[in-house]
Length: 512
Image 1 (cartoon, one colour):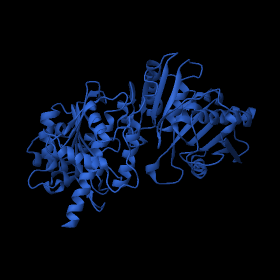
Image 2 (image 1 turned 120 degrees about the vertical axis):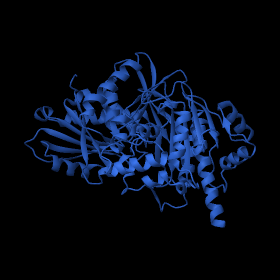
Image 3 (image 1 turned 90 degrees about the horizontal axis):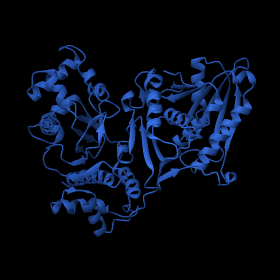
């Protein structure tokens, strides 16, 4: 009995902390969120937490009015989701109605066209890697990929899944099934409750709410959620929840940095960028071109992504304008953004950088004494003196040299030498202090490469492999006109093998 009560209590804490993570969105500077609900009415099985938006919130070009969350917490990770779980009532603790049946009812009422709302199963369990469900759930946003599910005849694996799901839903056609599944998302939440609390603390600090001290035995936000539920207060807008937090001594408040600045964002993955629209005036969403962090097709870098980045920045930014740029992107896209915004453009760009102490603006200041900042150290290794290309292994977050060597050996590129670039004192998140430091390192690297390359090697290509904060990559892109021909590379973390790099952009770009 005690274990069952403890498990239920932890499940309630999981729900409460997710609720407060969504409440934080109400206080973002450019938020599209108008209301957050706890144990809401109107969407059974997707009523744990509901987030409602104004008419300015779009996802993949379609207006979205709300996100409905079904949360499933488990004390251990000894379990997994399969395609059968979605039609098994027991999987959601029910007796007779499955999750898909409840999805159908919610879709009819809240997303009749298949896009007006999202219904999200958020679970601490992962999807069984050996199950067919793993092949159709997008690593990008958790949506079920209809093209993969629809592939194959009635006797194929996917055909049998479609048949079982249609039988459960009491529908006849694949088109009916596609419409019901269209707004559905499955997202695995791998953090423990302690990790979730640390993540929540970061968001609380950013929006002006009091973080939870490390030494306390109980989380005041968990307790407040229970009290609100007991008082039947379950729906909150910004002013309402702010007043409650003031009464409970949880409100700190914060000054908005440069409230008139134009906020622009680019994202190419969703992890930690789910709510980027809440922070920005304009946002470019490139998520659709990736499966997780892996590009869907190599030519998309040149044919789709770079033209869109360039056009977006040209349209969103104006000379003389103060801009905060949020880059939740691959390092190559951060570099390309800098390439598109010349230091002589007259656009005053600050990079929005999140840290444990809050959201910081990284903007170089020419008046600061740069001698106080640690610099890069350089090590060189000759590969083949008769070649003309140069490879750069930029290891700010971690050293990438060995992976670069493995890749170069496989790819047989005509590289003359490898230049290893490391921070002077330390690596990791604290290796770069601020925007002045990031710009200094970019200029130092550009100068070193110019001095290093002989007349013959300047005719060759520069190959850039980087594990670096995006702020540094942005400033490096701004000074890259000195590089001549260069190619950037992205590491495929999902491959699980050494040297798993793939080329992304090449500069100067080919004009389409």
